[in-house]
Image 1 (tube, rainbow, N blue to C red):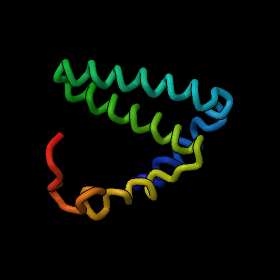
Image 2: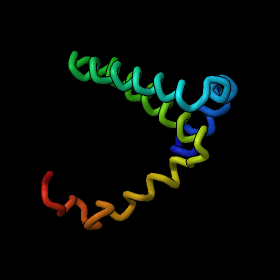
Image 3: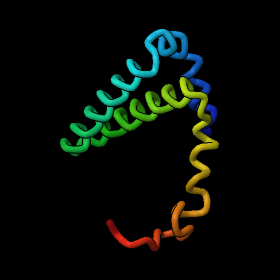
Length: 95
């Protein structure tokens, strides 16, 4: 499934509820999912990590949709490599 198809699917499933909750409330749910991902990474549980990555992506897609952002267009920022130096791998000084 392409990223744009995924975003549209998430909209079809959840957008009515997400619009009612609003951006701030939806962001809180996204942050909670990121916390669950952090715990899954710490457990080294592949199945849990896969599930939590999917949940985080779904909530991120919802937030993008609420703000009128097409994620497939947004990721083009990285199409030519690092947005600053345009190299792959990045040639910028490590921070």
